[in-house]
Image (cartoon, rainbow, N blue to C red):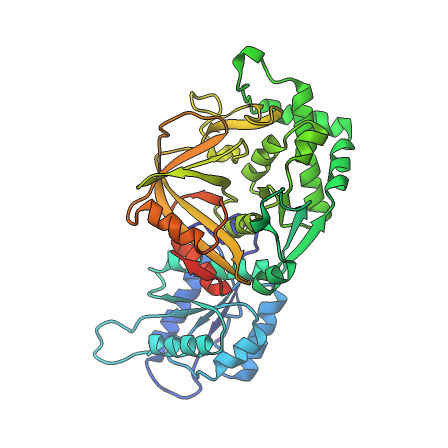
Length: 459
């Protein structure tokens, strides 16, 4: 599980450790657990805010939470080395708006008596939080053995908090006919806390045409360093003129996101951009997503939000693609040339990415080339249907493609449920045709994120 430190968030974590006013249980064991729990979090790279002294009552809880909030902590971990009062769950819920992490620690081994009842206490709090319709993650285990679980829980709760103050922009709207990708700004805000900022496509086109030539030339030099070959070797190297036009797209999107404080961007890429400007923005999209930018094409706002979730969770924006065809055990994914460059094979190898014209509307510049194979991948999708949000994620293995077509392709082998049955189930839940692909096994963390956000899960 990637650390949250890899996705640009700070490393301050609130830690409330409950002590006892009245004697009881094994306080020597509780002290040992408290010290080891803080040491484990510090070993993972986190600053533990509020853990200096145990909290005992409303006064000490509020004092600790004042420090946590002043430090802009990305998560809140609650530890009961010995069982505490369940009433304080409401005290914390009143002060901390996001999900909390309940960490239950083990009994002292082999001493013949109950030493802490930590799991019982955290079970009590979990029940209270659930009945109060408040979200939480649960970790159970020895401080030396739950590092991966802690990282996952912190990444998840930090993602939920970040979404509540994030902003997704949409340039234009969904492309003609893709009505199922229409965005609902109010449902987006109600579900995630996200702000949707609609931006003018004509103004974006004007922005693309007004990038200073000096800045464009500098960016062209950066693209040339990539040594991307042309898809048609007979045409020779891709000209600086074509690269300059795509640099204008790249610089315009990057500048727009900075100017408008956007965390993610959905771009209406056709038919206007290739028809009015004469170029596709897909090489620019490939470069931006390889840089870790949450970005979608064809006005797919939910695709951009799903990509932002992946970035915040620490494993990159992913490849937004079409579910092109399938058989009993495999799915063939394809999109016309905008996969993140870092998900493609190495530049210069036999199956490495090349750049050329779009297969259908023959204008430059798109990226042709297979996605890397040989490892596990996760397919995910967030979508809106029946007045609420839905989500799915399932896993497979990337295998060599059986045929060559232009654009970006990936063949994925799925085990377990037959693919036609899975497809039937998902389309009857309203899932759109765009899918996000990520390297690695990510379905479980997506399931937990959907639960934290109150999103209906499909698997």
